[in-house]
Image (cartoon, rainbow, N blue to C red):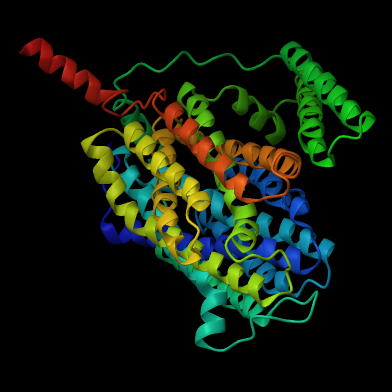
Length: 517
């Protein structure tokens, strides 16, 4: 029983919720650094304050993915998480811009990002559930369109409220401007409406039909999959976990002993915690108690398909770059192009608003590019298409250094937008073809590790690099981001895409034609 194609409007409805989700993310990405600086944060402390965003994704997404794989009720499999996540996100967006102090704002970022992750994670799995392989590039590209469109509105909203409705763009020191507050309120409305549209306009396939579709889809993969490895045993968990714990503990001691930058504790403590998690999994397995969500998620992490491991490298360098942009663009543009680091000055707020417009531009470009990427992938190859798009992004990042007129920075955002559209769609389309259908949710959640880990790395070392090597000049963080995209583009060419011209059916058909000829 092959999975049927869905109409354009059914794909549209099932992806429409991403419009609201990205409004939430767009408001966060474009304004949280501004909120932190307004409440007294120094530029070099921004990465450590931003650590909430990747950490919540690291924890929340695999758990929600695992739970949604095993859920079936009146609202279906994935939609219950859309529903309750949207309610929590709406509430968080109302509270965030009213934070009375820096550390309350940092805590609200944890809550807001966790709520967004609960809402967002099942959307990726929903595309895998509902669409056949031949439509998944289109499905993820449609999500990219809504992500771009939502982020355009979110990123430009404070500027529009200030310039079109004359809402105050400045405030007393330590007070969030009204333009930012009202932007978050409007965003909360859009999150609720768009996600609920998907919840009530989409009908999911029941578990028995998904099992039948999975059997049919497995026949489409003309390359024999790698042999499934055995689940890790207690001994391997103890050995590997012990090594991680010793290495992380030694690094933590060295950082404390030599008074190194505190941001480095993120990586060292993270390594030690990962070691403890493996030891705990080994103990549970040794006691015959491995049938639980924690053990299953950790097992799945070590049993991920080869294609997923290859994509992990691509994702690491892609998202390291993006995180550098989200953290440092406001600081870089206000300092280099508007000549100020004073967060209370009119020039700073003018520059910060312009960054919001620039973010709107790259997201608008992404919304348009989303329609072109499936065409480029069909004419070349998904991996090659992705590499080309990432190189456009690298050129865009580098342009911030060479363009002196702030009014011309929109040129840089064209390349960034092309890369962003591809990052949001092509890796997921490639990944979905390598995943078992009954674990689509948990593996989409685990795949988020390779978005989170580079962000944690960036949060740990970018502040150190900017302060120690670049004398606090944030523009160099954007140059590092451009170099990271070049590495990601090169790594893309080594990914095995089971259903692409390089990696699967297309390659075999070409070989057969050559033999017949």
